[in-house]
Length: 306
Ligand SMILES: CCCCCCC[C@H](O)CC(=O)SCCNC(=O)CCNC(=O)[C@H](O)C(C)(C)COP(=O)([O-])OP(=O)([O-])OC[C@H]1O[C@@H](n2cnc3c(N)ncnc32)[C@H](O)[C@@H]1OP(=O)([O-])[O-]
Ligand SMILES: NC(=O)c1ccc[n+]([C@@H]2O[C@H](COP(=O)([O-])OP(=O)(O)OC[C@H]3O[C@@H](n4cnc5c(N)ncnc54)[C@H](O)[C@@H]3O)[C@@H](O)[C@H]2O)c1
Image (cartoon, rainbow, N blue to C red; front, side, top):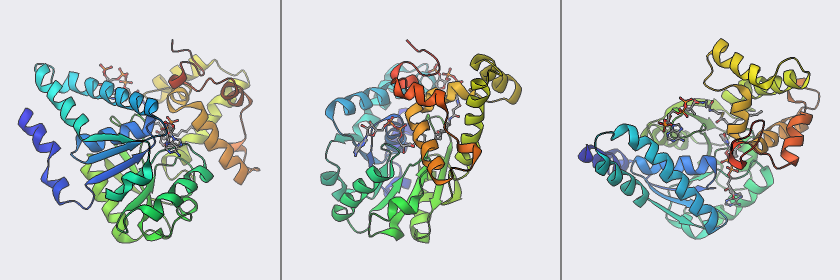
């Protein structure tokens, strides 16, 4: 009902929580989803990206996703659904200037490109302007949290929150305690994850945390199996869906995640462990990325979407 939604949007859980105001940096696949779930659960959110055009697209994607949620939740009450979407969107503002908006924020969630130097440059700038109490987290898929945090002077207030794609649907969040993360920060991140309606698991700051340490080698093995000509991508996808119960096959999931992001992850791990055959580069993946075929988000990857 409308009143129960209003309760969610202004819930006392958020009023009393340590984290009420959230800045999400990066309005791509992940940042848009994170901003959406934070806004749905009554947090005040600022979404930051590098241009107004990108932010317009982020807002469009958030609205599109909310409409999918509403179609089910408010099947017989379209007006209440409209009101819900409007209320959630009112909790989100946008900006192209992270330094000016973090001054009022309790938590910065970074979801920009998977590149250590770029993430460090961002956090180093924000560290100088954010209030002392502000917690910083990265949504990195594969980089050590401690390496990103080393660009700041707030190691105790720095951790990892690893969300899963699509964020509005996936219940898990990996909460990462790096060497410097204080217990108080870690507890605040666990509370925040629960306030989002997600299920947290505690992770050490080890490569790929839990999920990606298992998922990345599996996905790469699928690509290598195909490269060897031992199965078509369609058959491999069907096999893993019908034979292993996965909701998507590995090629569908690679396209869904983004082939650029997948390549960033593998290249980084290969550089660190060149002798590990699990992380060897894939010529086919490299070719698709070089051709700008980055998956669903560009209309073509392993498959075509237009
Ligand atoms: C090589 C290295 C690669 C490693 C990569 C690692 C990346 C990263 O670090 C970790 C990850 O995230 S790993 C990735 C982890 N992720 C995975 O592994 C994901 C695996 N896939 C899945 O779990 C399912 O396929 C989905 C839940 C995506 C879709 O469900 P489905 O049943 O297959 O198909 P459906 O018919 O389409 O959708 C049904 C309904 O779901 C709802 N809905 C869907 N999207 C929505 C959204 N954005 N908003 C709102 N709602 C959304 C909607 O109600 C829709 O109904 P509608 O009537 O159409 O509106
Ligand atoms: N795609 C996934 O399935 C997935 C899942 C979990 C975690 N991640 C991680 O989340 C992060 C983002 O991934 P994504 O898939 O959302 O990428 P994406 O390419 O969809 O979006 C990244 C966004 O960040 C913006 N950006 C880049 N540099 C910026 C800067 N300095 N300041 C502000 N904005 C900037 C880009 O313009 C872009 O809109 C990566 O670290 C990735 O590894 C991705």
